[in-house]
Length: 118
Image 1 (cartoon, one colour):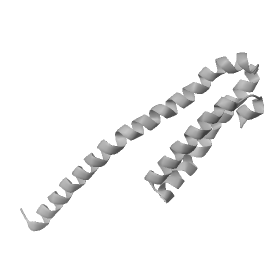
Image 2: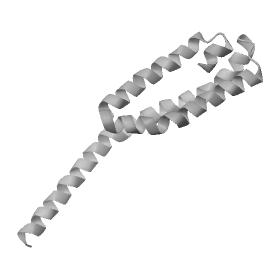
Image 3: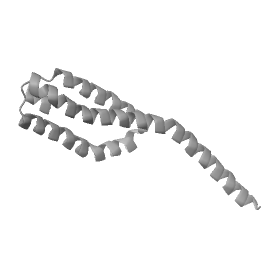
Image 4: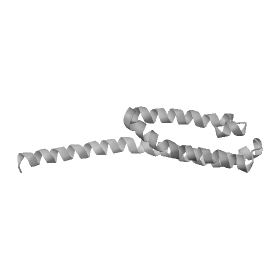
C-alpha cells in the first residue's frame, strides 16, 4: 500500500468516526425537536374544540387563524435555513426553541380573534 493510499484510508476512517459521533449527538435532539413541532401543529387542531366553546369563535375565525399559522410555517422555512448558516446551528436552534416555546405559551392568553391571528 502506498503512502498516499494509507493517508486517504486514515482520512476516510476519521471522517466516518466524526459522522458517527455527530449523528449520535444530533439525531436524538433533532427527533425531540421534531416531536415538539408535531405536537405544536396538532395542538392547534385540539385547541379548536376548546376555542369554539369557551371563546365563542366561529368556524371561519378558527379556519383563518389556522391558515395563518400554517402559512407562517411555510414562509419562515427558507429564511430560517439562511439564518442557520449565518449564525450556526447551536445558536440558531437554541434561539428557535426558546422563541417557539414562548410563542406557544402565548396561546394561553388568547381571548379574541385578533389575539388568535397574531
